[in-house]
Amino acid sequence: MTVHKTDLVIIGAGPAGLFSVFEAGMLKIKSHVIDTLEIIGGQCTALYPEKPIYDIPAHPKILATDLIEMLEAQAAPFHPVYHLNQRVEKFVKNADGSFTVTTSKNTEINCKAVIIAAGCGAFGPNRPPLEGLEEYEGKSVFYAVRNKAEFAGKKVVIAGGGDSAVDWALSLAEIAAKVYVVHRRDKFRCAPESADQMKKLAEAGKIELVIPYQLDGLEGSNGKLSAVLVKDFDGNVKSLEADYLLPFFGLAMELGPIANWGLNLNKHHIEIEDASTMCTSIEGIYAIGDIATYKNKLKLILTGFAEAASAAHDIRKIVHPDEVFHFEYSTSKGVS
Ligand SMILES: Cc1cc2nc3c(=O)[nH]c(=O)nc-3n(C[C@H](O)[C@H](O)[C@H](O)COP(=O)(O)OP(=O)(O)OC[C@H]3O[C@@H](n4cnc5c(N)ncnc54)[C@H](O)[C@@H]3O)c2cc1C
Image (cartoon, rainbow, N blue to C red; front, side, top):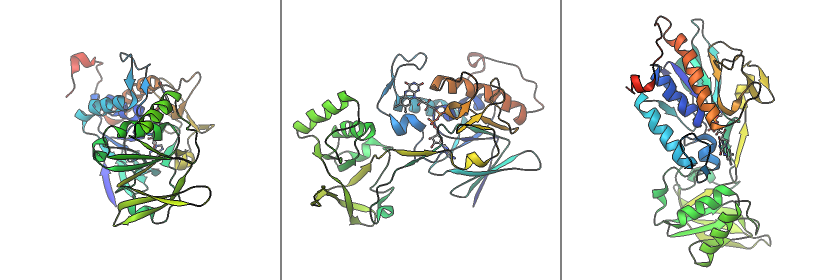
């Protein structure tokens, strides 16, 4: 078991969680961030990385993935420790008022306060039921694209019919040697412009549409894929030569263990006691972003940003109880 000690644990590396690292850092609060996904960014990276967002202040238009990159860079000076690919399972309030948070990978973190920025709950990819899948996961089978360059010159099979599958097919067609898109229907559930664009690339031979087919098996050895088997509805199987498989079958979301932490819940959301501090019914535990609810709550990224600032200021009193606080703008304070 790995045991860490820090000031603040942030559950969720979505936009609200990432901005909390910055806000906390500006108040000399050190953070560890935990997320079930293997990449940071929450819904922005998992659900709509290539879509432009139009209501982030001072950005008339910004791609979701670029917003996350910038939030990561903004948080970086405060050296957050990220624990990805693991779900927060339980917390214990210790006799000295601190918390011990434990994850599904047995990472244990002792901290003075917790921010729950868990969005709609823990995300997990819907995994295709393929024999021997585990052997390839994280090596040749990925549920999210962390580094697009890895696919340059490679043969990639993308499975799924939604926005993520189509957006990544369009994006990887620029650099991959071959892109197959496997979908069990003729129609795609994505933005119509993206479907049109994919059709054009298919006509130009840049993408091969394998429809209506579904995944049937994997071939390769030691985690290295050589082919993906697909089957049509008459049971005919064909083999697609492949280096990588990217299944995009959506994400399952569930509040998970947080639901049993004794917090006041309201229809799968955490009820906030005081929206000026974002504190929950348990002292030292705060909730922000989509998971937090109060009267007239707006579920927007910009709301989560402001909530991160409010929570961090209240947490400062817990982390530095003896320090007299003098409010300063970032323009005066700088980022140190
Ligand atoms: C298609 C689409 C378009 C959108 N467009 C806009 C837009 O234009 N403007 C706008 O403002 N908003 C938009 N939104 C909404 C916006 O994405 C959300 O409001 C925002 O992502 C919420 O941020 P968050 O940090 O609260 O949570 P999320 O982004 O949901 O991140 C929460 C993270 O917490 C993790 N997590 C949860 N439980 C646990 C646990 N137990 N252990 C570890 N990790 C956990 C999850 O895996 C997830 O990564 C859009 C949403 C969608 C789906």
